[in-house]
Every structure is written in structure tokens, then in C-alpha cells.
Image (cartoon, rainbow, N blue to C red; front, side, top):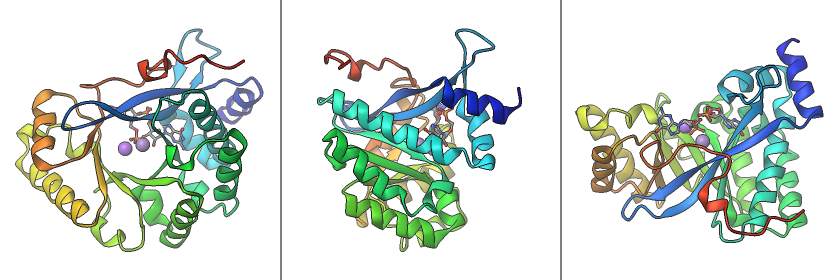
Length: 252
Ligand code: G
Ligand code: G
Ligand code: MN
Ligand code: NA
């Protein structure tokens, strides 16, 4: 099978799954919310999953990403409807979806249909895809705010002049790219960048998240810099049955 055939097959056979990773308050390490990350069941290798780094770029090229992003929206809202104790769930949307003017309406309809408060759905878009089409991204973010959803600029800091784009991209949250976080205790330049991002974000009334937090020393530095939220292997890894989703009676 070609990759395109595998993707079509995965839609037909319902082979996509969401995994969940915690996002925690830096100061006290309590859970803020979860991020949903998509995987594909590998029918050729039983028990194994295909990671999104492999199939998302292919889905983006063929246009199937629009269908996948809608699948993720529907699945995430279903999870929110079933788990009322979960404060919020973040999802990732492809840059291709930012140019789809019917998507904010689809998101709103899905939330209404499941009776889910829109503030519980956080939409992450990557900085690179947003800069790729600043006008589309700006409009998309404004449309999302009208539906009541929160927005996050993912992989923040990788662009050429990330701060300048904040004038046009009125997101609620900045997720500082993992490249700046991974070796933080040993990298004085990155410490300066991260501290500056946290200061600017606070001044603009935005929330900051650091991803790829892999050790205690990094978490302590982030706490000192005033980064609000943390995510990474030091806290937990993405899994299908996250503890925050246990204990509430599933429907069906
Ligand atoms: O889960 P993992 O770290 O392997 O994900 C790698 C990348 O794949 C993420 O950084 C993100 O950009 C992308 N990705 C993960 N889940 C989704 C999803 O549900 N939809 C889209 N469009 N991209 C995703
Ligand atoms: O959407 P985003 O680009 O933020 O996706 C984050 C990806 O990074 C997820 O696919 C997840 O599997 C991965 N990831 C999450 N935490 C860590 C971490 O602490 N270290 C590393 N290397 N990868 C992580
Ligand atoms: Mn993300
Ligand atoms: Na990221």
C-alpha cells in the first residue's frame, strides 16, 4: 500500500487514536489540562503505532489533513463531554486548516452538539504555519475567539521575529519551542531567551507553556523565570489512558 492508501484505509477502519500528555502548573505541579496527540494503529505491525511525524506531512500533501483535523476535533470534544472533571483539552491543527473558513463553524457546531463549554477546548497552531499565512491565521484566531475557544501559538520562538507576529496573532497562550528548553540548565543563551519570552508574554497578558521539560533542574529554572505551565517527559509521556481520564463513567 502507498501512504495515501494507508491513510484512506485508516479513515475507513477507524485506526486513528488520541494519546494524552499533561500540562502542569509550574509552581505546584498540579494538572492544568491535557494535550491530545494523534497516532495511527499500524495494521502491518500488530501492537505498534505510527507516529504523526510520519503521517501528518503526507496527510498535509494530499489534503487529507482537513479530514484528520476534523476527526481530532470531534474526538477531543467527545472526550471533554465524557470527562467533566477535565478542565480543558488542547488539540493541534495543521496550517492547512487555517485557510478553511468553514472550520470555526464546524468547531462551534461540534461543541454545541456535545454541550461542551468552548473555553475547555484549546486550539494550538504552530508558529511556522501561522507565519506562512499571517492573514489567514489572524482571521482564524479571531473566529475561534468568537466561538469562545482559547488559542495557543505552538513552537513559539522558532520564527525569524516571533515577537513582531504577536501584533497580528492574538493568541491567549505561547508554547515556547522545546529547542529552547531541552538543555536549559547548561545553555545561558536559552535561559536568556526563555526569560525574555516569559517577561514579554506576561506584559501582554498571555500565558506561557514550556514543552520538553525533561528534568527537575529545568523545571526549577522555568519556575524562577515565571513560565506558567510545563509539559514533558519529566512529568509524563503521551499515553492513551491518562490518569486524568480515569474514574468517570464512559458512555456507550
Ligand atoms: O506526538 P508527537 O510528538 O510525535 O507529534 C509530533 C508532531 O505531530 C507534533 O508536534 C504536532 O505538530 C503533530 N501532531 C500531533 N498530533 C497532531 C494532531 O492531532 N493534528 C495535527 N494536525 N498535528 C498533530
Ligand atoms: O504539538 P507539539 O509540537 O508540541 O508536540 C510535542 C511532541 O513532543 C509530542 O509528540 C510529544 O510526544 C513530544 N514530547 C513531549 N514531551 C517531550 C519531552 O519531554 N521530550 C521530548 N524529546 N519530546 C517530547
Ligand atoms: Mn502542540
Ligand atoms: Na511544539
